[in-house]
Image (cartoon, rainbow, N blue to C red; front, side):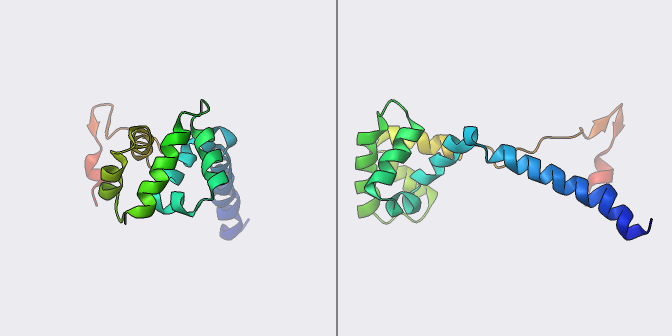
Length: 132
């Protein structure tokens, strides 16, 4: 077996398989509600039609309590130019239920990565090995 085939079989294909399974889990139907929170951001929310907004708000909150708040939020984001997260949160103060959902979206972890090992292993300080 030449080095190219060895690399392909021992590193590349297992990595691609792991990546595909990770993406399948991350974008599964059960995680859809989490990604819907990001559609409440002004640039995304303004682009939705009335029916799409209604469907989105019902997917986020099945009880329907966000529907009226969504109408107010749409008016707020349509009339005010919102260019950053700080402006978005200031505008959302007028719609507390939407503000709560926006804060939930901002508190989500960026990735699902986990720490594989600590920097101190069996009394040995491994930090010098990881310094760049």
